[in-house]
Each structure stands twice: as structure tokens, then as C-alpha cells.
Length: 184
Image 1 (cartoon, rainbow, N blue to C red):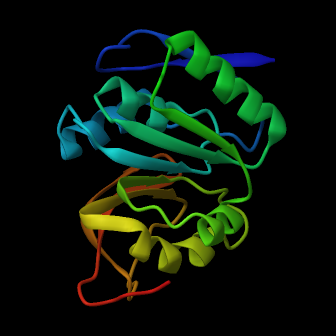
Image 2: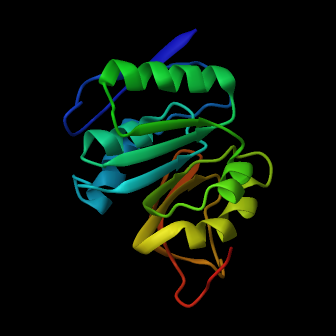
């Protein structure tokens, strides 16, 4: 069964992206995306972004719609990647780079740096603990991490919180690297 979610701002405002309904897929709701882009500013001109655990791609397509130059979507489910590619083609999203890979494997292989990383891993398992230390070294100076999780990132030696809110069972946070820490 196919579901859809609307892009809420930028040049594709009101356009829909489609995705396969899956119990493990939680597209970021409109209200949460609206709050995030109020925190970040409404446009992301020239930003280099990473949508790790891309899922529906709602965050990455929202960033492209708001002027990001490039978004790398990393997703491990083949069917979800197919859907991301269809959405990118339908939107004529030239800045979309869609990668079929497990997140940690991709991070170990690709050393690019980003201005903004969207992180919304599966809530079950230890994905968050695995990628948080790695992502510190993947940000450009002044870069930020947006994270969705069940309990939030707290007392991390790698990250400090800028903003946070909660919607239902999801804590969402805007984080910056703790200064002076270099982790590969």
C-alpha cells in the first residue's frame, strides 16, 4: 500500500512524495518539519545535507525544496530506495543522490562532510549509539545534526543540544558537535 506526505515549504510546497506503508517507516510529520525549519530558518541555500536512514525522504526532499544544493539519501531497503528514486525523478530533484547501503557501512566508506545531517534511525536497536560518534567528523564547521529518537540524545560526549521538542513518542533535537572532539 502506498502512502504519501506533502512537502510543506519551498519550491515544491504542496507537492507529494510517495512511499510504501511499512510499520518501521515513520515519516516526519508536517508539524515536526515545520518546527525544524523554523529552528533552521526557512531556506537552506547551497547546503550540503545527508539524510541518513532516509525512509520516506521527507526531510531530505524538504531541504532540497528549500534550496539545499545536495542531499545524499542513504537507505538500506531496496524497495524504499526505488521509491526515493521515483520521487526524485517526479520532482526533477537534481541535487538528490540516492544510495542503497547500510548507514554505518556508508559512513565508513564515504568521507564527505555536510552542513546538515538528518538522523532518524529505527528506534529498536543500537543504531543511534553506533552513528553519533562517527557523525561528528562528517560535519563542516558550523554544521548541525537533526535527530529523531524515542528518548533523545542526552549527556553525549560528542553532542550538545541547541533545541528540542517532543511529539507523541518522538523526541526531536537540533544538536551541534561538542567543541574540541575529533572522532573518525
